[in-house]
Image (cartoon, rainbow, N blue to C red; front, side, top):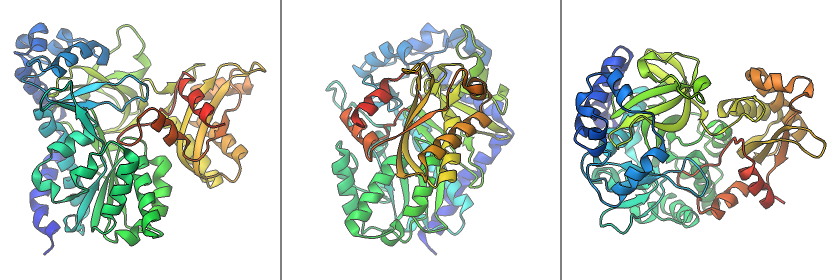
Length: 502
């Protein structure tokens, strides 16, 4: 009997509990809100918003307005300076430096002890539980897991208080037992220089029996490719013959899927998407045949949603989870045991099912192009790129897009800067297919493209190899969970990149 067989009954017991999500959504989520409010009632925030009087969800919605980082940062900064009982009970020692944007302004998201256990680590446990339930022949625990993380640093020089990537916080605080199951050691995993870390990970793990890997697809790919360079092997399977699953998140996997199939030749290799952010752990792909993720509703996270067609209105509708509809695009709000209250996380989702609640991430509230009324979101972009790649045999590594408001010939269009790992058979055809697919899946974009009156056909600019990594490195954001902004109404990002691409 192997190690996985011995541990499976204990771990899979949780998967049975998750199956109850389908029938008890409102009861479960109302219970979560009750626990959060009761615990925070004596905090400064709880007293200010009269948490002691809250009996039901409608009271909570009346007492507390919608928040974002700007409205909470004053409270958070006081917490970072060591003040207690501000947004959550007690003192918060850890702060996740948000990687949601690549500008110079950082967010510091509180990560409380309770949030670590009841949100982040609970999510990690459930990923393994659901994976083992779906894969009875797994030998997951017969080897090690490669967890690719970031780094941390001192917080205002306060003893025992640190800021850094969420992944670094998780690695630093993980149960010692888990350290026997993961690689590399903390001395390597928490290095701040990504290139040094990549080199040491590749060398330290190439002779280890790795059965599972976890991380952001773009950064994990860089590590795997470097390991193949060092070992001289042609595929990851030759280095880790027992590798069986990649738990990925942070960015859309679509542009990377074919590249991973070439790196990892095993046809039985599993890929499982997770939705874990600095602010919390929210979703897990529980069905390998369904790209949607299951919303995890019994953690210390209470969910609310704003319909995106009302997002810019002065008083938008805000719905609890049990009132959302499938097929609509929503901005997500969360209330958590890390002291975030009705907090707008910045992600947009679309529900595909309500029994249980399953969803796909469609983009960011600020990462879209709507310069001409086209309302192009990341989900549209991913579908368009997939079709263009299939038509031309291309593979995309990274991309960003922005509007050209008016060129020298008074023409308006979208400009796409794309880094290819495999170039298209024809860049012209690639652009044509991308443009036509966007018209097929987005009626607003199609209307603006009508007879080239408002928008002309989009332009694709080929990026030099390594351009996006060089750009992130220039901003001190290489590695960890840092991401390239995919779509933007502003030309700030694309102009910086184009200036480096000459």
